[in-house]
Image 1 (cartoon, rainbow, N blue to C red):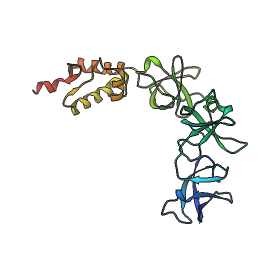
Image 2 (image 1 turned 120 degrees about the vertical axis):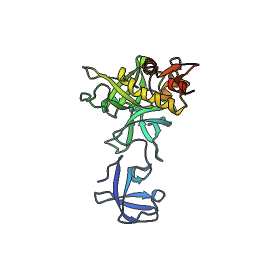
Image 3 (image 1 turned 30 degrees about the vertical axis):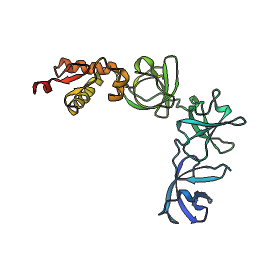
Image 4 (image 1 turned 90 degrees about the vertical axis):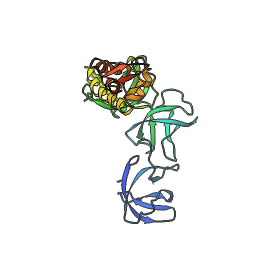
Length: 283
């Protein structure tokens, strides 16, 4: 049976003027409108489609890809606000996603980006969003280990930093003193587990902590130097945001790596940058 709000592999039953009707797996059919039909699709073929309710609450299929599906968290832009029912969010489909007033945490404005969890309302069968994220996060102990790489979705700023959803399941905190600059709500990042506390709270970083990061970064710096004729216009005085843009690490970690290379007499500091010593020796 086709699952609303998810991708389904459905079989083509018949071709009509409005489009192709697909077998819903439960004795019924679902329309795939003509504008979404691939040229080579024929009766009896299977096709992957996303199933949802159209503006008249009829089941419809599409090959367009929404930004997120049921059971996922996503950062979506407010397309408009209806004073009677709530806000409508852009999510990659012709019909915007409803964010009811009861699922909002405060007044919203058009153009604002909000992080929501997408679910199917039991009473109406409609797909809706909610900003009440906590009840949809896993309540089991986080299974992460220190230094583990994870995918993050920034949800909101806090007095200490930024909350972020980890792998669509748990929540953690990125501390301000570990960041090179402000983050944006809805920003997707690669991060690392700094620690999992006894109470289950997770501390996060955007770079691997400690000296473990120095050796891999050391190799990246050397590779960048060799590709740039032995010189980089980056050093221990470079702004943190420039360092993160180039190497994806904090300024502290970058300075550790430079210190290691300098002690090994592989680089020298000169004129707001660094240079490979062996490059100099060949002159």
